[in-house]
Image 1 (cartoon, rainbow, N blue to C red):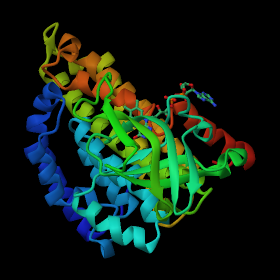
Image 2 (cartoon, helix red, strand yellow):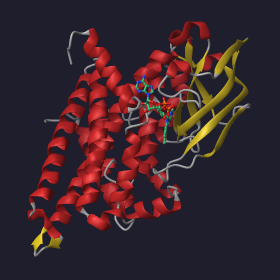
Image 3 (cartoon, rainbow, N blue to C red):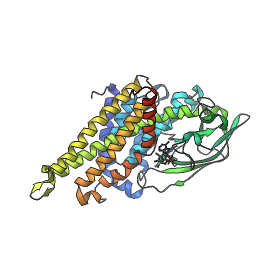
Length: 384
Ligand SMILES: Cc1cc2nc3c(=O)[nH]c(=O)nc-3n(C[C@H](O)[C@H](O)[C@H](O)COP(=O)(O)OP(=O)(O)OC[C@H]3O[C@@H](n4cnc5c(N)ncnc54)[C@H](O)[C@@H]3O)c2cc1C
């Protein structure tokens, strides 16, 4: 499909493509081994402006369209997932609440620092007792004069180890359920707020998720984003953008896996022929190509609609569901086409296989995406 980008977005995408190839890909295996992104790479990301893609230009960012951000994340999806995670979490769920609903004072105070990457952001909704059921969170925020006092625990928070600013969703009125949740900006170092050690994960090495603990943590009332009781709806809007960005990253990974599959199918000889001459291998390549083409169309048409200002959570859910499920299938096929080598850590196929698995879980599981799509269809008489 024809993807409409602004000139500066096109130029930036070329820069990112080169950055991925020359700076990130060569250290992918090292990062995997050491479970950390070197500080000099984060500095280079800052210099490129990657942290400020979704920050409006008036606050020093690039103010890229959703389409532009998806195209950048697609490029970053081609290498180790930790690199795109620090950027996509920041530009997606980390900063979007503030951009959409922050007060002018909040924007003045934080967005310029986020644009330069001085402040990295994180988004904290999930808790030990509530993930998919977001309205079931327990972290409370009680008004006390000019402050709110936060108590509770958040779980699995990406970027928590490096973030300076957290968008935290807490309950301000339990009786009101969905309408009783509020978003707060909480700075690292606020008394009563601590970040736990990195949780031990299946993959996504180099990116860390941690618990957050709030123990009588006093947050100024001026740090409420979007108004008291508006947190649930705001969080859902934030997740809409985040989900499309995840889908775009999965598309980049799927493209890279197909390229690897094809290269191996042309080179590897079995029974006196390149394995690409066997129909069983050709079908895996063909199915992957069809799915990638469909992914691209779903993601970029949803992005174009979002850029037109349309609210389309069901289309975003379709794009995330399809792209992440199919990218996992493509990773499985790529592993199969590589045979025993696919299972070895010498090649990145097994890493993609592990890292892509997460895309079906975070920012809403595949089941929750199906729920959103089905609810829309049921309400609109089958419209999709
Ligand atoms: C590495 C990692 C990074 C993460 N980063 C962040 C972050 O930065 N910020 C943040 O807030 N959260 C983050 N999360 C949390 C993530 O969004 C949740 O794990 C996810 O939403 C699922 O919630 P849960 O783990 O509590 O699973 P549960 O909600 O307990 O779900 C368990 C299973 O039940 C299914 N299920 C639940 N309800 C329904 C239903 N109504 N219908 C059908 N099936 C259902 C789910 O699909 C799933 O299969 C992260 C998670 C991981 C693993």
